[in-house]
Length: 165
Image 1: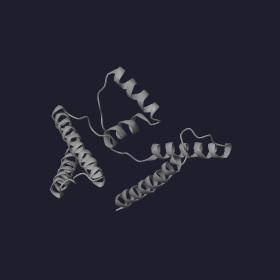
Image 2: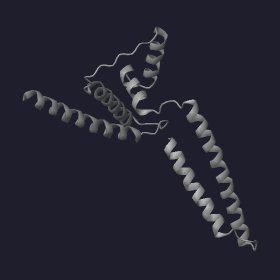
Image 3: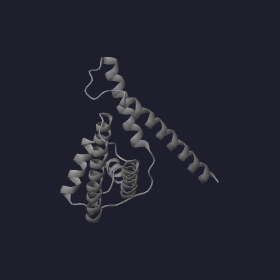
């Protein structure tokens, strides 16, 4: 019975840590990257950064994952982690969970085809826009069917792109 309580406490602690971490990251965003800070603001920013690192180090992770890498690969990963101000573990987790995987050749070809279609639809919209503006000056207006067809094509393309992403 105590083991369940301990696990619940760990979950509650982890949730509180994540909530605090989210709040601190939000506060950190309030400091513009190239903004000159006075002494008090600099100390506050440093305290926020320190607390973020402490929280990241204290989050309980109890499952082990092993990967194999060459010495050179490991050193490159460590440098990238340091550049990102993360531990190697945190960096690998971030890359694996927060970034999109590389696009395979089939998907790349499909996305290229979608880009071409999107460009064509954009061209059609541009032509309709010019025709509408010209109509205001006395030229013929595009038909409602042309506008509807173009709008339907745009929405269909948006749906296809969303499915691919």
